[in-house]
Length: 116
Image (cartoon, rainbow, N blue to C red):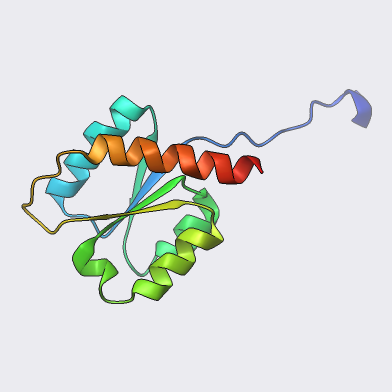
């Protein structure tokens, strides 16, 4: 088989939401919303956030408000750099009602930015 006959791999972007430093309650809530929104879910630590986001290119980055508050500019910059929506959520034990709608809206905005 010559090189011209070899199939070319084309990267397919998979819709992904990335949760940074989420607790079990948040992960369950985002997982439920992600299932409905038909988006994969990944999680990482604060220390791994930059590398994980750069590698995975999530449509939405989900970060607890208490974590976001430690360095707001860095999280805003990270979301901008990977062209993702940034979803700041209430702290541990809080009601995450409306998460699904917020996730879907931010995904649509991010997809629109990436298409242009």
